[in-house]
Image (cartoon, rainbow, N blue to C red):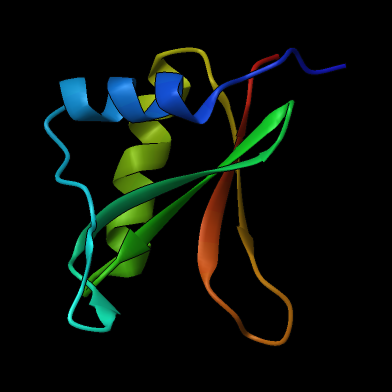
Length: 88
């Protein structure tokens, strides 16, 4: 069973890796990473902006190198791509 994980810890890690974070301005998200708590044992990571697939692949490699368990998924009915991040 996965251990508890906090979105703030994943966000801190990604900031240390030099990633810019998305902000909601003018009715839309600026390009960058967005992290959301999905439950006590899962955090979702999104990329807002162009190059979504490539950016998520790069983030996946960084998170896995830091011993996070990462599963790339896509929301139902062709929705957003995301990374489901847990601690093994």
